[in-house]
Length: 263
Length: 259
Image (cartoon, rainbow over all chains, first blue to last red; front, side, top):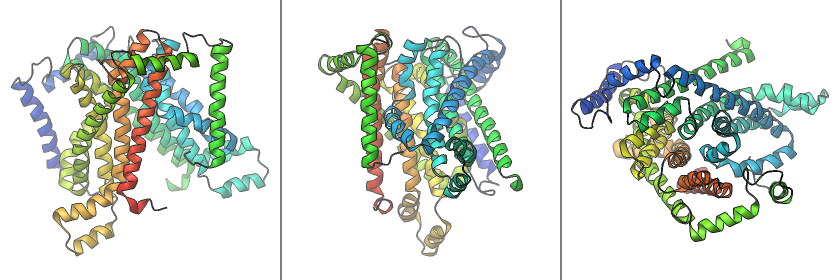
């Protein structure tokens, strides 16, 4: 959350109290056996399981290996979505006829939840790599297209007119005027779509996969081992944050490159 | 992308008609795409009739749809009933923000779908576990956007309220809520979309009833036509819910949508 520089400064004891309340209630509830430990493990138990999973394999692989295979699938699906979605969005922003053809199709498909593609993904591409990659693609693609399109539509007309006066071709305008001008919007879209893609991947792996972090969660669930499920959730959260931080870094690098004087 | 002018509408209709023709040509006419990969239009029509008249996967289409929609609305209502006031409070009070934000930061990065296994362990495959998952899916966006909404109220408005000694419940009712409302609605829309996606995923992973269950059953039976029917139903419900929320938004903030 964005905040003013001074907003919660000096109120850190309250923040500590908040966290203490959260873990305290959890610890008490587990310690008093309000639920069997199988269902509600102690916080330190979850931490120990998490550390253990790092070197002891569960469901065939260690936590690191599960995460790596998930991440590879994510990277493939996300890059594919960006590589098709961003150029498509830019071209739609320039060529009116393309916009008219694609937009109605897009509006029809938009409301299909990405995860609802799972049955067809399994039917068409199997459950190894192809199926999950299609789901990630379905999750990440719309935000890539929409943001590139918006970015291209809101480019200052002056820039386009200047390029046209100088005799630039359509493709050259798209590549050298629209693309750089739409960059902030595109990068914002990429961040949104990375988040959606990562979430869709988890869903896909919960349903069809034989490795990956989602698969580990399912195995933990069928063993009724809540500590493993929670460790997996923590790992998923950490990777999600890491992906967002990386993209933010890339974003600020790009912005500095665009406005060298502001840095 | 959502501008509707007659020319665009006509172009859209032509495109859709073209796609339908292409679909018919590549499946029924020439058989380029095998029936195990993608259904023929006739098969989809038959599947639609089968599920609406005779029923499929333990129920008729309307029963599945109603079941899924009811769950979404329950989870969504429970989450926003907590999330919106919490977000407003966190936006208004620095102390509340300091207290709740760290806890919220722990929950926020976990994607809603990752709660599904935990919900199944805790509550089984029944409706309660679906509602729990939807609750987490809808909670996060409603809190964040309500918070941002309060923070986006302009300082002069707050100062005027302070000067006029508008305080307490009246301050919340007449300054905080209307000022934050546009962002609150953004949050509600994101929450609703997340709820719907999450429910479909939860039903795909394990359910005894609902649209996700139809999808699962369709893929177990290798029945592509039924899968397509269920996907269309998912899209239609999602679209209609979003439209209903947009209508509610316009009805509750008439001052923002004067034509």
